[in-house]
Amino acid sequence: MRTDPTTARTPVRHAGAPAPTESPAQGEVHNATQPRGLRRLWQSPGARLAVLGVAVVALVACYLLTDVPGSLAFAVTIRGMTVLAMLVVSIAVGVSTVVFHTITANRILTPSIMGFDAFYGLTATAMVFFLGSAAFLNADSLTIWFGQVIVMVAFSVLLFTWLFGGKRRSLHLMLLVGIVLGTLLRALSEWMQRMLDPLDFQVVTDAMFASLSRPDETLLLLTGGLVVAGVIAVIPLLRILDVLTLGESMAVGLGIDHRRVVMGLFAIVSVMVAASTSMVGPILFFGLIVANLAYSYVGSFRHRFTLPAAVGLGMVCLVGGQLVLERVFGFGGALAMIIEFAGGLFFLYLVLRKGAR
Image (cartoon, rainbow, N blue to C red):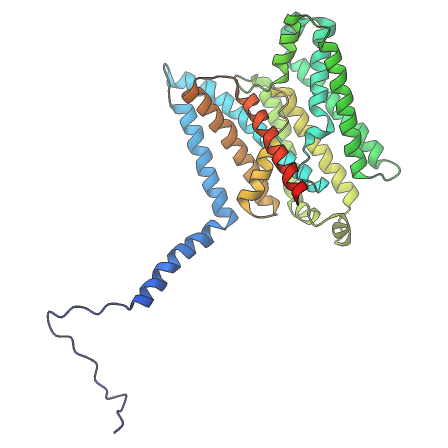
């Protein structure tokens, strides 16, 4: 006998009977969708940038507001200048390194390969060698900054003009020229340093390591202005940078004037690196660390994600490292040396890993 579905009775639950529960399979599916949704959200580059931004704000707040022995306003003013210097350096080094990696198609090279640190070391050594340590320490910092920036940018302009002005030359040839000139300038600096007395040599050695504590306000303003101008110039080129990651032939096939774009990007990178190096000193491997960490952290090739990630990770390294050194270990100015040591090890790791592949 068939049962009419329209007249079929639904089971009646008596009073006091337990409520029906969902089947175990339904519960497992419901519980599995929650971690999967969170995992999908975490895989989003925007969510990762948001988490990184929260971490940066928390570290900056801890650095500014904790362990204040005296006036809070005075401490925030002094420490705020240090944080601003860290921000300027993070933007300059992070943005310039990621852009440099894109236009050279190599994630191991950094803008320092062009010899900026060697020029900085040579100018500082030459001033102490010819004028003495007293004249170097008492010289106007603004004059020194302008001189170093002009020398570094002039070298870059000459190199770019030679590379792109007449006969087309290989980008790798320019990198090779930068490496050779950097080696030559370092050798010249070391030759002059060997003839200095111990006091003058100590002054030169101190100038070779980056210092972020108590930066000059005028230099910070000028450097920040150049860095902001460089960022403003890079923002309209984000999509072009994404295309450049496909290679020169593909970019040319998609209608991009590769020669003109690369020359303009090199000029922007040169100005940003020269300004930040002249303000705080050379940091060779800092850009290598933050750029490669940004690629792994974001998981995207798009520069609208990798550039902010490099800046944020740079702030985490600088502010977090300074916070740990000052509040935990009681050290003051050893952060640059630790970054250089860690960056050197990271560079060797990248080279060995690439060689193994």
